[in-house]
Length: 114
Image 1 (cartoon, rainbow, N blue to C red):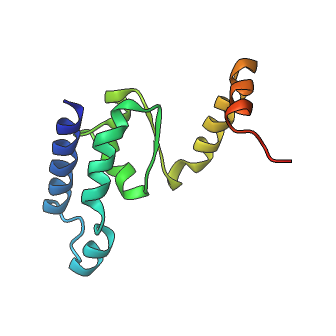
Image 2: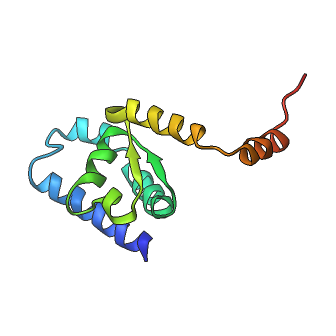
């Protein structure tokens, strides 16, 4: 079950980081980690089923650790401010590879107002 595996590994990795001295300043840790449980739940729910995921820098670092390896495990890409140019290039590549049929489908699905 991808959700359970990712949830457990991300939280265990976070615990290891804390035990090794990360987030030693309690006030800064509370500020930086205020939404971490929501982030973990969101990533664990959707990341195994998408081609790419944009997340904040601390979460991108967490999921790239050897104990999680999100990209390698699920064959998807993780983007954050650390690799924003790569994200924009990836979007350009997707757009450039769209077929005429796909473009027409988007035009029909999302008509522009005159």
